[in-house]
Image (tube, helix red, strand yellow):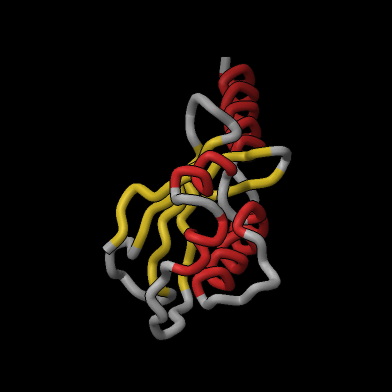
Amino acid sequence: MYIQLSILAGLLCTTLAWAQPQQTEMKELFAKYDQIIEGKKDVKALDVFTKKFVDEAGGEKSLTEGWDKTKKVVYDLSIKPSRSNKDLAYIQRVPAGSKQKAHSSFIVVKEQGQWRIEGTIEDE
């Protein structure tokens, strides 16, 4: 019985680890997101946001122009994978080294094999 429970627990942990998006993939995605906010032209909105999000925002040009320029802040990412969909995750950005609540929360989906932002849950 003990062995069966150990095997079951190991499989469950392994399955959850496979379902969770990789931290490096998310860091790369949000580095591109920060570049778009900063107004850099070498990153395309469709590399960061889903097509649905870009269309709802009024197109790529509209999306890349409406950002307030603020002081650059380094964030830690808290990744919570969806329990029912391996291609969906929720990301919270918290100022690095801070115990503050999340600055912003995002819905991230895998589109065409790449993680992309589909929307925000809350922005402050």
